[in-house]
Amino acid sequence: MTVTTRQGVSDAAVIEQSWQEPGVFAALYERHAPHISRYVARRLGDDMADDVTAETFYRAFQKRRHYDLGRPDARPWLYGIAANVMAQYHRKETRMLRAFARSGADPVVQTYGGQLDGADDRVVASGMHQSLAAALAGLSRAHREVLLLIAWADLSYEETAQALGVSVGTVRSRLHRARKRIRAALGGDNPLFVSDEG
Image (cartoon, rainbow, N blue to C red; front, side):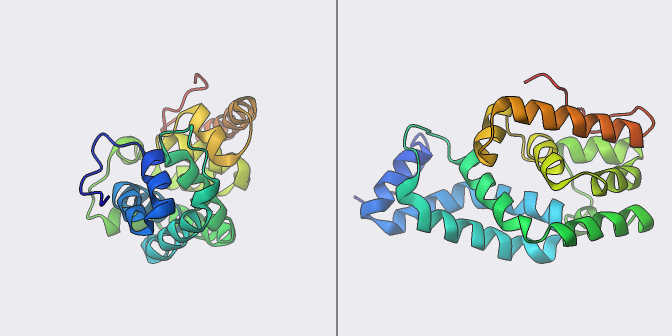
């Protein structure tokens, strides 16, 4: 059976069907690649977004038979794979954040022509984007990953835990520490509006 539309069909169903019909996996790419790419661009810059997104979906395709079909939404799984791919670029991300903190030239605003949404809008509107970049650069990879999966990828605590293969308690703990460090660096402000409530 060829899949012509994915509306109303769970990611798990697409993945399961791709076991017999590998081409069906493209529907998962169409559904989630733009979001993964935007997230990667925000973290590593536009020049890395295509490569990291492609590698994320390549790895997902290779691992699709190990996917837990009891989880209808593959977003946490895909963001977890993307986090693993991006881990090799941790130093690049930190350098990019530090350069942005010094220059104020946000590569995401430049790439997307100033069209931001959600947390990005709030940061730019607050006038703290350079300070936030510096604060993010000062976080450990584990703390930054949790904070940004929740703030920029819009994952829940449970989805973030699933993506990173850690407990919800660990997510809460890391988020609390990350928020505390961000607030301290920004003089008590929280431009990402990420609460400790799950």
